[in-house]
Image 1 (cartoon, rainbow, N blue to C red):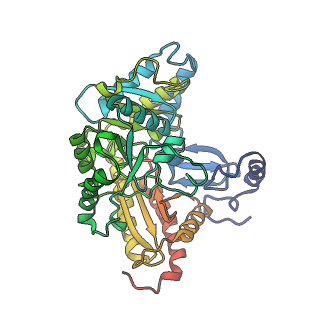
Image 2 (cartoon, rainbow, N blue to C red):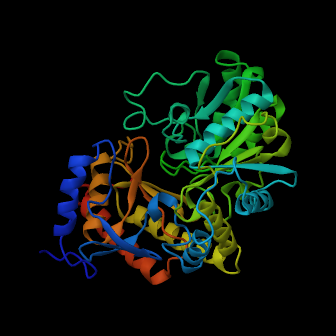
Image 3 (spheres, rainbow, N blue to C red):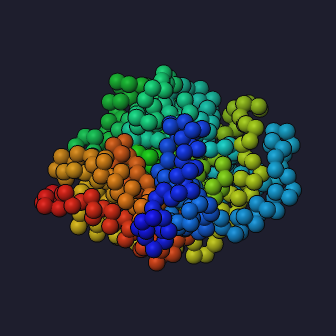
Length: 454
């Protein structure tokens, strides 16, 4: 077998993984996508080992779910203790302390010095659904505004809120009614052709005509927005954009919902991305890294809003499972320890410095962007036309895993390579992973190396 990296014993996929892939193709639908053609044996901290003994550096974090690293001892021990007590009663049948303790903790760590309440659910998508339900009940309005490049989930309502068509929406309609879409301040591809400093202003000004031609603000229950787009390509909007949206919501009695499913729990160098802007959302939805890989989502909001729906109108059988709650409480405890956020910020600095350096060296990188450790490079065939380099991005992903690095793509054009490293990764391992990424970018850049930089 061909050895492609010091940590790889076989080609990828190895013989054992190939056998499992045959089984997977026989019994699992093709619609369930996979990034790396290999099966995991174990994972620890920032490393994943497959069933053939190949070890990969993890720059995906289980799609942003293990910010504290894989199989952290404090979490597995807390889970072991809880397993010996009970696994499930359903909170609606027989209440348990971890649910309430987590709701208490989320009220403490989310921004806003006002009374808050929380409902716990199974996922980020379910959290978004409930946030919209609560907002509609509270305001007695029907309409919801979302944004281009947004991703909020794969259920009917959250799929409707999501912007990307192919893979997420194509063929799955009709969609939920009364959902309207606004331009997102995407400086590299500003929808109004403005430069970085004016893109946010142009997008916010568009609201004025939007309320005249699409939907009256008195009909709008909520505006939902990601502080940095996730699946939409890790777009970091100019600093005026989010505060401007919050102001519009406040002026019109609209519930301001911030989706921190992917940006939350330290990913951007703060516990939540809105902390960078000193914003206090009416409702925040959370998921992914909230419970170190266990299924959990949360909706935390102003008590008066969250308390509006009547008894029995919110919930679900497995929402706020005891194991997930225990894991989440431990995640928060770890992140509040001295040094955790400082290290996360250092990781973000190293990543963004390296990506900017790569942007200077390789013509195929049209844009390098990030907020903390939520960073990405956008690949283009031409820096002037900004034609998306979709195939090249896919090749980068492939070259990375063949050399021992797990990394993912994003963006509505499938041309963004995103980094989601565990925030606890040590600098040496981080730099090794970045070396593998740069090697892959260098390889796909060969056909563009003669072009002048725009």
